[in-house]
Image 1 (spheres, rainbow, N blue to C red):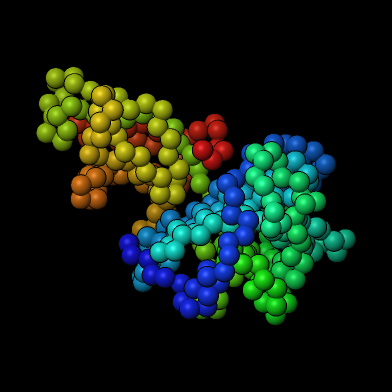
Image 2: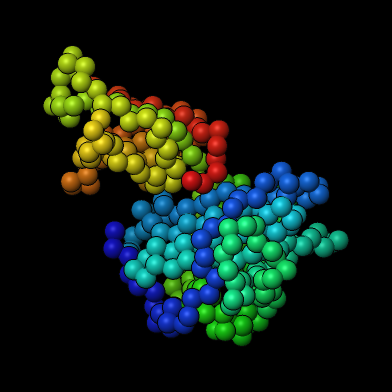
Length: 311
Protein backbone atom coordinates (compact mmCIF):
# COMPACT_ATOMS: atom_id res chain seq x y z
CA UNK A 1 0.00 0.00 0.00
CA UNK A 2 1.33 3.39 -0.94
CA UNK A 3 1.24 5.85 1.93
CA UNK A 4 0.84 9.49 1.02
CA UNK A 5 2.88 12.19 2.70
CA UNK A 6 1.48 14.28 5.50
CA UNK A 7 -0.09 17.56 4.32
CA UNK A 8 1.88 20.80 4.40
CA UNK A 9 1.20 21.47 8.08
CA UNK A 10 2.92 18.26 9.08
CA UNK A 11 5.73 18.66 6.56
CA UNK A 12 6.55 21.97 8.20
CA UNK A 13 6.78 20.24 11.56
CA UNK A 14 9.04 17.53 10.15
CA UNK A 15 11.43 20.18 8.84
CA UNK A 16 12.36 21.08 12.41
CA UNK A 17 15.10 19.32 14.37
CA UNK A 18 14.16 15.96 15.86
CA UNK A 19 13.91 15.85 19.62
CA UNK A 20 13.89 12.85 21.96
CA UNK A 21 13.83 10.02 19.38
CA UNK A 22 16.15 7.58 21.16
CA UNK A 23 15.89 3.82 21.29
CA UNK A 24 13.53 2.25 23.80
CA UNK A 25 14.90 2.13 27.35
CA UNK A 26 14.85 -1.14 29.28
CA UNK A 27 11.29 -2.09 30.21
CA UNK A 28 10.50 -1.59 33.89
CA UNK A 29 8.97 -4.30 36.04
CA UNK A 30 5.21 -3.73 35.86
CA UNK A 31 4.71 -5.25 39.30
CA UNK A 32 7.15 -2.73 40.72
CA UNK A 33 5.12 0.06 39.13
CA UNK A 34 1.99 -1.21 40.84
CA UNK A 35 3.61 -1.76 44.23
CA UNK A 36 2.26 1.56 45.48
CA UNK A 37 -1.29 0.34 44.89
CA UNK A 38 -1.87 2.42 41.74
CA UNK A 39 -3.27 0.47 38.80
CA UNK A 40 -1.28 0.76 35.58
CA UNK A 41 -3.44 2.57 33.03
CA UNK A 42 -1.43 1.27 30.06
CA UNK A 43 0.93 -1.56 29.29
CA UNK A 44 1.95 -3.19 26.03
CA UNK A 45 2.41 -2.62 22.34
CA UNK A 46 -0.35 -1.32 20.11
CA UNK A 47 -0.51 -1.36 16.29
CA UNK A 48 -2.99 0.02 13.73
CA UNK A 49 -2.38 -2.73 11.15
CA UNK A 50 -6.04 -3.40 10.40
CA UNK A 51 -6.81 0.31 10.08
CA UNK A 52 -4.09 0.57 7.42
CA UNK A 53 -5.31 -2.52 5.56
CA UNK A 54 -8.94 -1.41 5.54
CA UNK A 55 -8.29 2.21 4.58
CA UNK A 56 -10.28 3.18 1.51
CA UNK A 57 -7.66 5.76 0.59
CA UNK A 58 -3.89 5.71 0.97
CA UNK A 59 -3.67 8.30 3.76
CA UNK A 60 -3.41 6.04 6.81
CA UNK A 61 0.17 5.27 7.75
CA UNK A 62 1.34 2.38 9.96
CA UNK A 63 1.79 3.50 13.55
CA UNK A 64 3.08 1.45 16.47
CA UNK A 65 2.87 2.66 20.06
CA UNK A 66 4.88 0.97 22.81
CA UNK A 67 3.88 1.79 26.39
CA UNK A 68 5.83 0.61 29.44
CA UNK A 69 4.97 1.51 33.05
CA UNK A 70 8.05 2.72 34.90
CA UNK A 71 9.04 1.55 38.37
CA UNK A 72 7.93 4.95 39.62
CA UNK A 73 4.15 4.60 39.99
CA UNK A 74 2.07 6.71 37.63
CA UNK A 75 4.85 7.17 35.05
CA UNK A 76 4.97 5.61 31.59
CA UNK A 77 7.35 5.54 28.65
CA UNK A 78 5.54 6.11 25.35
CA UNK A 79 7.39 5.36 22.11
CA UNK A 80 5.49 6.28 18.94
CA UNK A 81 6.78 5.01 15.58
CA UNK A 82 5.26 6.43 12.40
CA UNK A 83 6.15 4.45 9.25
CA UNK A 84 4.82 6.64 6.46
CA UNK A 85 6.70 8.09 3.51
CA UNK A 86 8.70 10.16 6.00
CA UNK A 87 9.38 7.80 8.94
CA UNK A 88 9.44 9.44 12.35
CA UNK A 89 9.80 8.27 15.92
CA UNK A 90 9.24 10.07 19.19
CA UNK A 91 9.50 9.13 22.84
CA UNK A 92 7.60 10.75 25.67
CA UNK A 93 7.21 10.22 29.36
CA UNK A 94 3.62 10.36 30.57
CA UNK A 95 2.77 11.13 34.18
CA UNK A 96 -0.74 10.31 35.39
CA UNK A 97 -2.42 12.14 38.25
CA UNK A 98 -5.89 11.32 39.61
CA UNK A 99 -7.75 14.06 41.46
CA UNK A 100 -10.05 13.53 44.42
CA UNK A 101 -13.05 14.13 42.13
CA UNK A 102 -11.99 11.16 39.98
CA UNK A 103 -10.67 13.17 37.04
CA UNK A 104 -7.35 12.16 35.47
CA UNK A 105 -4.55 14.27 34.04
CA UNK A 106 -1.79 12.89 31.81
CA UNK A 107 1.18 15.22 31.43
CA UNK A 108 3.70 14.53 28.65
CA UNK A 109 7.42 15.10 29.22
CA UNK A 110 10.13 15.39 26.58
CA UNK A 111 13.81 14.61 26.86
CA UNK A 112 16.16 17.53 27.50
CA UNK A 113 18.22 18.65 24.51
CA UNK A 114 21.41 17.18 26.00
CA UNK A 115 19.83 13.82 26.93
CA UNK A 116 22.09 10.79 26.58
CA UNK A 117 20.73 7.27 26.23
CA UNK A 118 22.72 5.47 28.93
CA UNK A 119 20.78 2.20 28.69
CA UNK A 120 19.48 2.69 32.23
CA UNK A 121 15.93 3.48 33.26
CA UNK A 122 15.03 7.10 32.64
CA UNK A 123 15.21 9.64 35.44
CA UNK A 124 11.93 11.59 35.10
CA UNK A 125 13.37 14.53 37.05
CA UNK A 126 15.66 15.31 34.11
CA UNK A 127 12.82 15.51 31.57
CA UNK A 128 10.85 18.66 30.67
CA UNK A 129 7.13 18.84 31.45
CA UNK A 130 4.85 19.97 28.62
CA UNK A 131 2.11 21.26 30.89
CA UNK A 132 0.33 23.15 28.12
CA UNK A 133 -0.24 19.83 26.34
CA UNK A 134 -1.55 17.93 29.36
CA UNK A 135 -4.53 15.68 28.65
CA UNK A 136 -7.56 15.83 30.95
CA UNK A 137 -10.47 13.44 31.37
CA UNK A 138 -11.53 10.43 33.39
CA UNK A 139 -10.64 6.78 33.93
CA UNK A 140 -12.81 3.79 34.74
CA UNK A 141 -12.13 0.15 35.55
CA UNK A 142 -12.30 -0.60 31.83
CA UNK A 143 -10.43 2.28 30.27
CA UNK A 144 -9.64 5.95 30.01
CA UNK A 145 -10.47 9.00 27.88
CA UNK A 146 -8.42 12.18 28.05
CA UNK A 147 -7.70 15.06 25.67
CA UNK A 148 -5.78 18.34 25.57
CA UNK A 149 -6.89 21.94 25.52
CA UNK A 150 -5.85 22.37 21.89
CA UNK A 151 -5.59 26.15 22.01
CA UNK A 152 -3.12 25.89 24.88
CA UNK A 153 -1.07 23.08 23.32
CA UNK A 154 -0.81 24.80 19.94
CA UNK A 155 1.18 27.63 21.49
CA UNK A 156 3.79 25.15 22.74
CA UNK A 157 4.05 22.54 19.97
CA UNK A 158 6.11 24.55 17.44
CA UNK A 159 8.95 24.83 19.94
CA UNK A 160 9.15 21.08 20.52
CA UNK A 161 10.49 20.16 17.09
CA UNK A 162 9.50 17.51 14.55
CA UNK A 163 8.50 15.05 17.25
CA UNK A 164 5.54 17.30 18.08
CA UNK A 165 3.81 15.64 15.12
CA UNK A 166 3.56 12.47 17.25
CA UNK A 167 2.39 14.14 20.45
CA UNK A 168 -0.90 12.58 21.69
CA UNK A 169 -3.70 15.13 21.98
CA UNK A 170 -6.62 12.73 22.51
CA UNK A 171 -6.40 9.23 24.02
CA UNK A 172 -9.19 6.70 24.35
CA UNK A 173 -8.13 3.38 25.88
CA UNK A 174 -10.68 0.58 26.24
CA UNK A 175 -9.37 -2.91 26.99
CA UNK A 176 -7.41 -4.10 23.94
CA UNK A 177 -8.21 -0.97 21.91
CA UNK A 178 -6.17 2.23 21.92
CA UNK A 179 -7.42 5.16 19.82
CA UNK A 180 -4.99 8.08 19.76
CA UNK A 181 -5.31 11.37 17.94
CA UNK A 182 -1.83 12.74 17.31
CA UNK A 183 -0.96 16.41 16.85
CA UNK A 184 -0.31 15.81 13.14
CA UNK A 185 -3.75 14.22 12.67
CA UNK A 186 -5.30 17.69 12.72
CA UNK A 187 -4.14 18.07 9.13
CA UNK A 188 -6.17 14.99 8.10
CA UNK A 189 -9.50 16.20 9.43
CA UNK A 190 -11.48 16.49 12.68
CA UNK A 191 -12.06 12.75 13.05
CA UNK A 192 -8.62 11.45 12.03
CA UNK A 193 -6.92 9.24 14.60
CA UNK A 194 -4.79 6.13 15.06
CA UNK A 195 -7.00 3.09 15.69
CA UNK A 196 -4.68 0.55 17.28
CA UNK A 197 -5.00 -2.74 19.13
CA UNK A 198 -2.78 -4.41 21.66
CA UNK A 199 -0.36 -6.87 20.06
CA UNK A 200 -0.65 -10.45 21.34
CA UNK A 201 2.52 -12.49 20.83
CA UNK A 202 2.46 -16.08 19.57
CA UNK A 203 5.29 -18.62 19.41
CA UNK A 204 5.61 -21.90 17.55
CA UNK A 205 7.00 -23.79 14.60
CA UNK A 206 6.59 -24.44 10.88
CA UNK A 207 7.52 -27.55 8.88
CA UNK A 208 8.12 -26.90 5.19
CA UNK A 209 8.51 -29.66 2.61
CA UNK A 210 11.69 -29.49 0.53
CA UNK A 211 9.69 -29.69 -2.68
CA UNK A 212 7.61 -26.67 -1.80
CA UNK A 213 3.99 -26.62 -2.96
CA UNK A 214 4.57 -29.57 -5.32
CA UNK A 215 6.46 -31.64 -2.77
CA UNK A 216 5.60 -35.27 -2.05
CA UNK A 217 4.89 -35.53 1.66
CA UNK A 218 5.81 -39.23 1.60
CA UNK A 219 9.47 -38.30 1.02
CA UNK A 220 9.63 -36.84 4.53
CA UNK A 221 11.96 -34.06 3.38
CA UNK A 222 10.83 -31.63 6.04
CA UNK A 223 12.64 -28.39 6.86
CA UNK A 224 11.85 -27.20 10.39
CA UNK A 225 11.53 -23.56 11.40
CA UNK A 226 11.50 -23.46 15.19
CA UNK A 227 11.19 -20.69 17.76
CA UNK A 228 8.96 -18.56 15.53
CA UNK A 229 7.47 -15.46 17.15
CA UNK A 230 4.72 -13.39 15.55
CA UNK A 231 2.60 -10.50 16.75
CA UNK A 232 -1.15 -10.59 16.17
CA UNK A 233 -1.30 -7.22 14.39
CA UNK A 234 0.35 -7.99 11.06
CA UNK A 235 3.32 -9.97 12.37
CA UNK A 236 5.27 -11.57 9.51
CA UNK A 237 8.17 -14.04 9.41
CA UNK A 238 10.04 -15.46 6.42
CA UNK A 239 10.51 -19.24 6.43
CA UNK A 240 13.88 -20.79 5.62
CA UNK A 241 15.27 -24.07 4.34
CA UNK A 242 17.42 -26.09 6.72
CA UNK A 243 20.59 -24.50 5.26
CA UNK A 244 19.32 -21.05 6.25
CA UNK A 245 18.43 -19.91 2.73
CA UNK A 246 15.08 -18.18 2.09
CA UNK A 247 12.34 -20.61 1.12
CA UNK A 248 10.26 -18.04 -0.74
CA UNK A 249 7.35 -18.40 1.70
CA UNK A 250 6.31 -16.39 4.75
CA UNK A 251 3.71 -16.49 7.48
CA UNK A 252 1.52 -13.58 8.54
CA UNK A 253 -0.63 -13.34 11.67
CA UNK A 254 -3.22 -10.60 11.89
CA UNK A 255 -6.49 -9.54 13.42
CA UNK A 256 -9.02 -8.92 10.66
CA UNK A 257 -12.68 -8.04 10.36
CA UNK A 258 -14.65 -9.42 7.44
CA UNK A 259 -16.83 -6.75 5.87
CA UNK A 260 -19.70 -9.22 5.35
CA UNK A 261 -21.17 -9.58 8.80
CA UNK A 262 -18.48 -7.46 10.48
CA UNK A 263 -16.99 -10.59 12.06
CA UNK A 264 -13.58 -10.20 13.80
CA UNK A 265 -11.10 -13.08 13.46
CA UNK A 266 -7.48 -14.01 14.08
CA UNK A 267 -6.04 -14.98 10.69
CA UNK A 268 -2.92 -17.02 9.88
CA UNK A 269 -1.81 -16.77 6.25
CA UNK A 270 0.82 -18.52 4.11
CA UNK A 271 2.30 -16.03 1.65
CA UNK A 272 4.36 -16.35 -1.51
CA UNK A 273 7.21 -13.87 -1.18
CA UNK A 274 7.78 -13.31 -4.91
CA UNK A 275 4.24 -12.12 -5.58
CA UNK A 276 3.06 -11.17 -2.10
CA UNK A 277 -0.07 -13.22 -2.72
CA UNK A 278 -1.84 -15.34 -0.12
CA UNK A 279 -1.60 -19.06 -0.87
CA UNK A 280 -3.98 -20.12 1.88
CA UNK A 281 -5.12 -19.11 5.34
CA UNK A 282 -6.80 -20.36 8.49
CA UNK A 283 -8.75 -18.34 11.02
CA UNK A 284 -10.05 -18.54 14.56
CA UNK A 285 -11.81 -16.30 17.05
CA UNK A 286 -9.77 -13.22 18.12
CA UNK A 287 -9.34 -14.55 21.68
CA UNK A 288 -7.81 -17.84 20.49
CA UNK A 289 -4.66 -19.03 22.24
CA UNK A 290 -3.75 -21.53 19.51
CA UNK A 291 -3.88 -21.42 15.73
CA UNK A 292 -2.37 -23.59 13.02
CA UNK A 293 -2.61 -24.75 9.43
CA UNK A 294 -1.80 -27.89 7.43
CA UNK A 295 -1.66 -27.89 3.63
CA UNK A 296 0.23 -31.13 3.16
CA UNK A 297 3.44 -29.43 2.04
CA UNK A 298 3.48 -27.01 5.01
CA UNK A 299 2.38 -27.35 8.62
CA UNK A 300 2.30 -24.59 11.21
CA UNK A 301 1.48 -24.53 14.92
CA UNK A 302 1.36 -21.35 17.03
CA UNK A 303 0.40 -20.81 20.69
CA UNK A 304 -0.02 -17.69 22.77
CA UNK A 305 3.33 -16.87 24.34
CA UNK A 306 3.80 -16.69 28.09
CA UNK A 307 6.14 -13.77 27.37
CA UNK A 308 4.05 -10.89 26.04
CA UNK A 309 6.89 -8.34 26.15
CA UNK A 310 7.89 -6.81 22.81
CA UNK A 311 11.06 -8.28 21.24
